[in-house]
Image 1: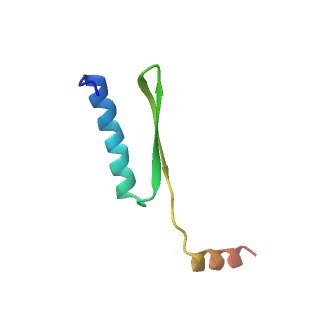
Image 2: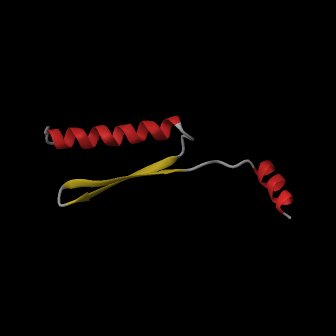
Length: 63
């Protein structure tokens, strides 16, 4: 991996997003999009676990 400022910045941003995910629900993924050799997007998807008991209770309230 080249050791240039752009690479360092992209790496730092990816690590920052990963740390955010770790501090949140702890479940998810990070997608890094590269175009013409440069990072253009960093997308974070966070997944939330839902308790089944709370879902059924909330659904019955909606009826």
